[in-house]
Length: 92
Image (tube, rainbow, N blue to C red; front, side, top):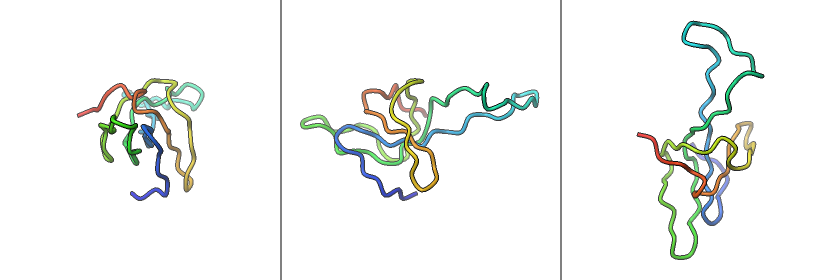
């Protein structure tokens, strides 16, 4: 996956994992009732701050705060740009 975007400093570009559209029992969830996703895949990483390199890598699955970052649309896809300090952890 090659996105033509390079984050600056300690920022990370995350592609959110799509929210479920059905419940386990098969009920379709309307857009207005869907939870905002809180996990995604790292697509691009900035170089970090002086004396503080970034610790996440491209391809990592991460968990972030519900209202973290700024939404961004590139090449028709939705992304989230967050500071590394807003990431809660790496999954898996």
